[in-house]
Length: 229
Image (cartoon, rainbow, N blue to C red; front, side):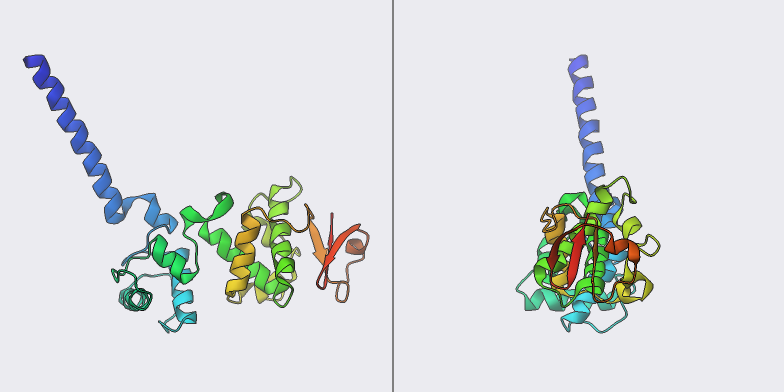
């Protein structure tokens, strides 16, 4: 009887510890909130800023995208959720992300985060807006091909911000807010679509001034861009 009581006591303690861990995660101390998977009042960071920018584009909010989930953001999220027939709880979860046309960190493909998606979409928009959709996917694919190549930095931010690598960084167009087409192109590239078949470079022959880039063998042309290896 004493042995059984001890076993039962240990089981109760173990269950209590598990419930405590679950409670901590639900309150917001887990990595899910920090990673942008679940946003609510009090959350901060790049994922919040993306949601604010998207709400602004859709006309539900007109504040500054400061990355702080305060009262104004909460009200805007609830208005958006009500308009879309969602539960107006003010929490940005998978359904609200999807309705906004954004991806949470956990649902972004290829192991990339929502911040990676946002930065890649900005690069696509800055470099290739106005190009055919397949051409925008191709530009995103070149960035990802560089990430995979030992000759380049091993992160999206490292590749994009590498000195003199992309015109949109030097002329400031990287900091324009991307449209939904750029997001879709970036996401399709992350999902594995590579129209370039492994190209690491591209250029517009009408504007390129580098003698070196002209020496690269052209693999294909999409829109106004030549793609090379």
